[in-house]
Length: 618
Ligand code: ADP
Ligand code: MG
Image (cartoon, rainbow, N blue to C red; front, top):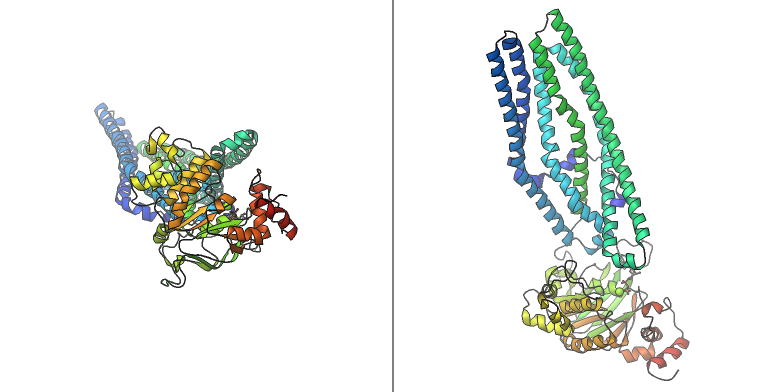
């Protein structure tokens, strides 16, 4: 997790970057030719001083204007060739590297889809977004620029020094002297810079999260007049990022100053010494010109090293951040344990199920503890319990959005952990309290619930969910909804989510309070239509209102992490104080939040509330 990120001791830039190899491998030929082209181009630049030397010692000294013009022509051609080759390099790598970026992004996206829900509970979405955008862009830039130029510039420096030492080895050594201190400075810088670069990237992720939350929650922000506090939170993060970026700039400025000053001093010293030698007659003027222009030509390759190392650092952190996500294990495809065939009872059976959220405090009690429940084939079971009691959690275990910590759940006798996920998700359909619509048409959103379902199924599902309003939308079921489309009301979205759940005529249906946002009138209509669907499936329906409970054959009461009672609505109403209390409260205009926190009802409260529900006078 980003917040807990600690720099591992054995982290190495090179090792991080090496992990990119599988993605780079397909374009390795292109990349290598690009590097080669750039090396040739850069070394062509080193030929220019040699032409100058030839000109100074030859035509210039001999006062031969034709020779000077010829030299100038050579220089022009060299310049043009160098420019052409650098352009060619860019052209050679642009497309393959865009491909590398795209394939890494696709891999990340695919992986995110396969990570367990627990992962997404833990990771802020902004951190994932920034990994998929900024970080991958940094990686592509690394492959296009620092990677190539580190090779190119190192080669140029080596070739250059060979030329320098060949011209005049004493002066060459004067220039070589600063290399060792420069290398030490660079490695110190590298260590510092990598830490700052990493925090900057994490902070971009945090900032993205805040922006995303305030955009998604814009109604709350406006409704509660929270602009100021959101802006403050944003500003605090933005300023933290700004401070980190300034740290980065300071480090870069420092290294830049050193890297430019030290060679400059060395060149100055070589100039003085060389001039003395020329005056003494120990060196030709042409050699000194060639020597100094080679040294000047090497300035950019040397100076760029600090900057390139900085980019490598950033890319290494970006790569680390990418692989932090990629290294998290995906959901297991099929069972690893108990690949037993069907056995025992049919229907949906919970046996000794216990569940604790993976990121819950270790000493906290589990959300669900020793859940034993059997829903007979074809039966509809309502699940009732106080808010926060674990109803949503229990329903999430059936499609394996989370895996039970212990115990097991079977569908028609088959352990859900023993069947392939595709099969499980074919058997079970879900609708959650908070309906999600994707940026797609109404039809696509609903048909997502069943592979290969057609027009007829769509129409039936929409009518079960009383979602006939879609026919009045501008383009009927082809109307775009979701973020990029038409905004629907909460009740309309719930009905589409319900249609999605029932469209495939699933064997098992799990509905987490799917009617909570509907008005009483629509709810009655949906319930009437839903009855026919429920007849054909084995279903669990989380319910708050007596009217929803009426859809069920039996009711299970979830209380303090256990199923404390099972029976028909009437039985529980009469015999269970807590149930009576919940059901009577559910009709209060204030809704569920008006319940007192987890009451331990006495017979007294039963006496007060149960008759009220049954219509007796109070
Ligand atoms: P219900 O649907 O009955 O209102 P939930 O199943 O949503 O209750 O929540 C049960 C408990 O589990 C609550 O205390 C809640 O804080 C906790 N909880 C819910 N989701 C998570 C999660 N993703 N991670 C950790 N704890 C959670
Ligand atoms: Mg819930």
